[in-house]
Length: 488
Image (cartoon, rainbow, N blue to C red):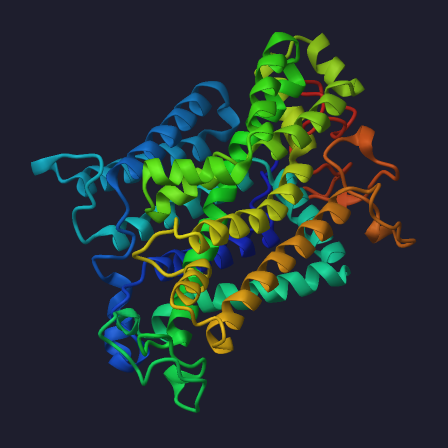
């Protein structure tokens, strides 16, 4: 009789039970209707979570995600018998996304840009539930790896909390995230209409709620503008950073690992973007493409990736020369396998820390474009508030200028603090060594460890050498596979 297979580690199971509903709540709040302030009553507010505008994404987005998940699930079913349930759940998740995309495209008048139907909230809930099942099956297929990921994350969080800059930055960003997510409840969106003034023009703050920050030149509430601007500024910054990081990291890893003529071509392209002044290029693109804030995201994302590409390439070059990379090549591992299983996990800490820093740059970029009048005229952002105050000649009205200015400075400083903290936490060379065993450094590959981390107890009761991700250098000595650095 075969021994009983260990189940999902308890701490990873707790993660699933916490993050699944938390993600659902955040996604619902991001697309929550703007016309249901807290004064409309409890029943009306609860009904907003199933309103037609919730999760009302374009059809092409769902169909693209469905295609990616289906390819990953089918390939996994063919190549990895140990994760059959996980890959089957991926295919099921792809089917839900595909159904969502077809409904959103409106079969009667099919178009990929359609946002048809009012069942987005239902499909989004189903997708998150199935995603939780996928995470469960992934952990059950490799409980040691799941437990190791939880342990490493806990250690990183423990080190991060010990950094005062990181803690301060996290608190600041948390406050602004709270304001952005709860904007529909904190301020009535209709107060942004030019006809919905709350008092005389250009008046300083008073005790009245909507006049806590005074009024602008049209008698509108500066507080309402400030709250709703937080949402746009943060969304643009985060989405543009995602695009910049994906493009920059991909180019950097490919150029650093493959080298030769491909690296020359990619680096000359990177140099061209670095040489061209960013602001004139962004201004020209904004004038040609338009000032919709989704286009602003694309402009910032596709003009801010060269720095990431340079940094990641340098680290990929270092990793490519490590011994376990040579061992993986010697036993016949494919280039894609080596890059995915060994190079990417080892450069991931640098990518993550750099991403946090790029968010600050993206938010400053959006503020600059909006202040110059190249932002989205239909949505408020902190840069738009400054532009409006400047255009109206109200620079002496401190209550209109100071709040967005302070918010921009605080958010940029907070993301800089967080990026610096993560850089120190994830790079042992930048972190002061602690004497206690629990504070010893973590890296993606064993070759990068100054003090090896030992003694992690897995769900099966065995111990193993920790790694962060799928990088090389970890694993037990008895593991004979084509992946010398990973756990099977």
